[in-house]
Image (cartoon, rainbow, N blue to C red):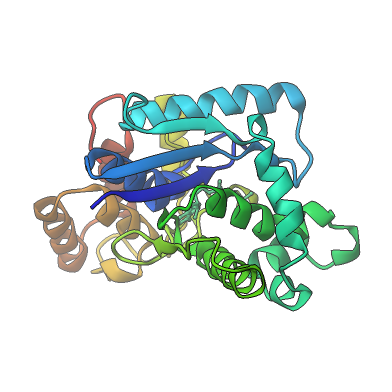
Length: 283
Ligand code: AQP
């Protein structure tokens, strides 16, 4: 049975493994299922909830579309478009903001994190971001929304907005389901926290080899002596390696950790080989 899929990515530049493994990889799988009708949106209106340089924003919009296509989304099969070109998104966001409750928005962890200590100075756009996201999804009757785990709260609020609107105005919107990546975890960054640009802990997906190597060599590890056995399950390098390598390579590296005599530099080199897109489609 045909399923309607919708998701978006902000054109904020420097797309990273969190974006790819948490969301875009899922987009490609959904695009490849011929039963699905997929819409992938470059959400530039969301990007301007924080200050943007107009020239860079324009370039980043193109770069995001290019990343979709390079990752395997087929523009002959799926719709790829730019959010600000469809004014219905902003219009629906206003209508839905009259339905959404302040109490729901006050609970959003992403707003709390991004606004930081001085909430008074945050933009209203940053605060009402989830309402615009609800508009994006509900406009297309999307049933499935592939997102990273960090966006789950926003899908819940989308469902709350749709349910309240339907209750007040009659059956109008489809209540969407989130689809998150298999292991249901955040993709960790170089410090083991959620990978994100604002934490400056990313490994970017399109980088010249030298810069990619530098990001990978910068992954935080502990300072155990070379000869000591290491616990792979506590290691930021291994956490990323597991997401990129086939099962047999994961097992081989796990054994090296446990046997001792291996430095983290070796594990980082192994990770670099998997993360270097110019050599292979390791993902
Ligand atoms: N670390 C992550 N793990 C899993 N999924 C992730 N996503 C982002 N980071 C992770 C998913 O990528 C999709 C696009 O996200 P976005 O456009 O909202 O980008 P973002 O979240 O703004 O990226 P950053 O780096 O986290 O930016 P900042 O630091 O500015 O907030 C979404 O589906 C998201 O879940």
